Length: 201
Image (cartoon, rainbow, N blue to C red):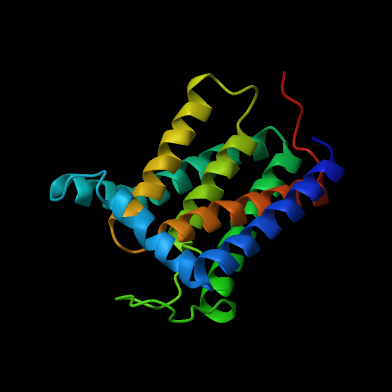
């Protein structure tokens, strides 16, 4: 991926984020579709301790563990003088978390178009943004080529984070999707500014 491709990717993902917000938050059919998707996803995890376990992992444990892993790998990157991956990872985490909170709390609004129990805006999810950005940071800073299990583990973690934030009733499915789009846009923008961290075989 070149800087130009990364820049175009960032723009495309930003437009996808905006489209997700406009369609799923600011239209009645979008809000209704979100409710329907929520019911489907909510039914995937049994109630009681399984739902509580997935929710706790998604909203607390995953972020704590990912942050610890990112710090350790970041220290390894410093020792190896891998500055570009470190800067890209740092910009991705800091930019995503700050932008996500700012958009959710100060910019985006949710009109009440349907009979929702909780009409407050919750897009994007700061928990999903934080977890997604930390996963991206770990992947970017990983020393050497990725072992076969790393991207697979990252995918499972992100899937559980997405499901747990819906099952906990903290977020709608569109919040989760928008959060991943936001992290992708910020990460791609960081690569466009700083440069490609490294070329893998």
